[in-house]
Amino acid sequence: MVRGRDAGDLAENRMLALAVLQLLEIIGEAANRVSAACKAEHPEIPWADIVDLRNRLIHGYDSIDLAILWDVLECDLPPLVEQLPILLRELGE
Image: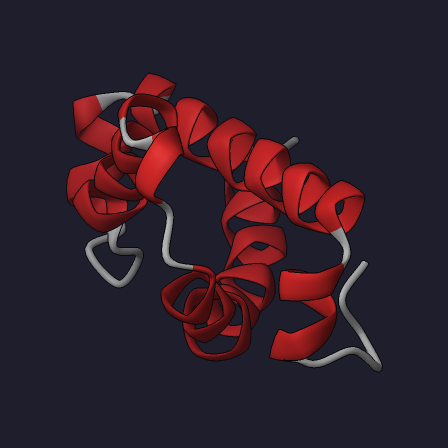
């Protein structure tokens, strides 16, 4: 959704920003539902940070810093996207 875009696009395109926020909230909600055992087996995934981001987006929706959000999209999300298929294969899903 943000491939080929930059932080300015996120700031200028309200629909894009809302869509990205919603998707990050969903990722955080999914991470929150992962069992404690699975989280313990995969400490390489920053589970608490993912859930904390979700909580910040949900409860602090009126004060989201889009520059910080863009950093999450650029720096934090790509490694997670790489790790999740491996985890899902291991879980047999």
